[in-house]
Amino acid sequence: MEITKLEPEKRQGLVVVLTGNGKGKTSSSMGMVLRAVGHGMNVCVIQFMKGDIYSGEWDGVKLLGDQVEFYATGKGFCGIQGNPYPHSEHRENAQQAIELVKQKMALGKFDLLILDEINNALQLKLVDLPQVKEILQLRPEMLHLVMTGRDAHPDVVNAADTVSEVCEIKHAYRRDIEPQPGVDY
Image (cartoon, rainbow, N blue to C red; front, side):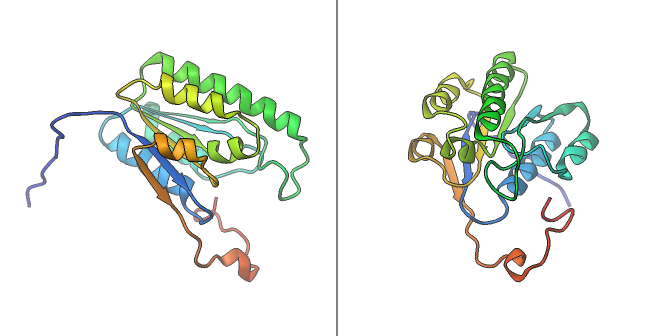
């Protein structure tokens, strides 16, 4: 069987928003990382709110080699699941992540940039709407930018080329089943 490689007439960078209350926003973005690496693209992932509990993608992306840079910049989910850090520390980390995003975009070496949980960070006021709008403005034309997290701001949704909402229909957690490695984290 012959495999066809499609090539668009015109390449352009896209802004993709993955939002909603269901499980799978980060998982979807990690699938995009895998797909991009398969196309020989350079990828950067910056996680805004994860960092205090191990997640398999941290080591999984290392297996993809030097095509992927990965940064877990947060201190966990602000204000939930017994997270001990005050809002001010979460905000300080998110502000550092914003600066990291600008630095990585300015390098011009990445084809895909994932901003994991930036929508939550905006909703929780760890980052400000003008900062997110600046990222959208500074985005190089050919850079694919993926923004994940619940509660995507309407201005972010309007700026996006593609928006997907992940809707929870049923979740094992609601049946008192603990999160499972490799599936949930």
